[in-house]
Image (cartoon, rainbow, N blue to C red; front, side, top):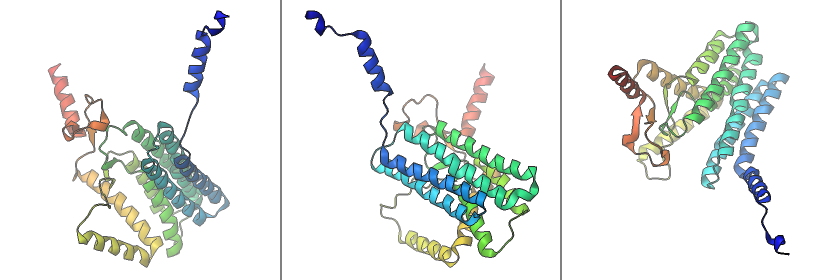
Length: 287
């Protein structure tokens, strides 16, 4: 009878392994991410069917879901590694594949091989941009993006469809759209610095002029939403690229390799990429 109370080591090990493999996920943020994926897939289907306006609106809806899942995760303190990886995979479909297919079928088919290669470049650079963001998530300054964010690039594509529709322009075989596709791809994987506005806290008291500025932007967009959204998105991308080319601003700041606790990083632990390169050159000369 005494043997009945003897623990079995193998059984305990198997139960512990099963508990480790059992996955628990947060439902609400991941449902929003799934809505993002659904909208991107819907955009691809509508592009194939020739409903380019519906495809553009679906990409916009995907961007809304993309904002919601991150906000909900932070508000409910339900951020997880699973959610971050799932979000990136969905973003590649909604903001990489969907705009790429839309661009080719809507405008770049007459260019033949050049057209679909340009669209593939857009998708590939979007994937590289997401991969780099995931790797550098804990080592890059939060107030700025390194390279144009892929949702913004997709937003430019979607808003261009709306703008061309509103202005009654012919997109098929348009050289401007071909150049835009290639430039968006290159800017996504560049080291240009784009403001993320994550440091802007609208819950705090701000000067009155910020409210006037916000009202002014709303009025301008309301005058002709389809065209003005395209102008605003393109201005954001163009200004970041111009500042990057002319080197008017500093590069994205990275955390020094000696820091092992990114959540507790001090301002002195941040270093600019140019400074990092200079330090490495000095070390090479010493050796």
